[in-house]
Length: 81
Image (cartoon, rainbow, N blue to C red):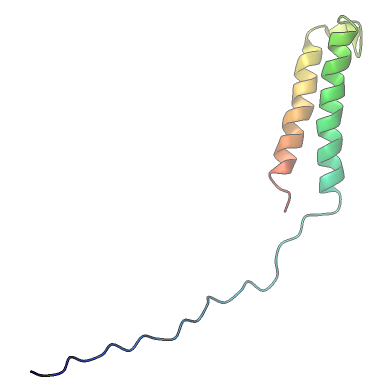
């Protein structure tokens, strides 16, 4: 019976690395944390003050302002590396 041929595997070579890893700008993390905290504090102050603060003239729109800060902080969090 003839002997079967053995397969020779190629040596594994990892894919080349990227030239430089991306780094977030220095302003991103403080701005992200600031927006998240400001939104949270805005909403808490609105509820604790029974709609008198932060801006009484806009009434329930204070919730929208607080959530805009929160969403912008989350949007910045997606850019953080």
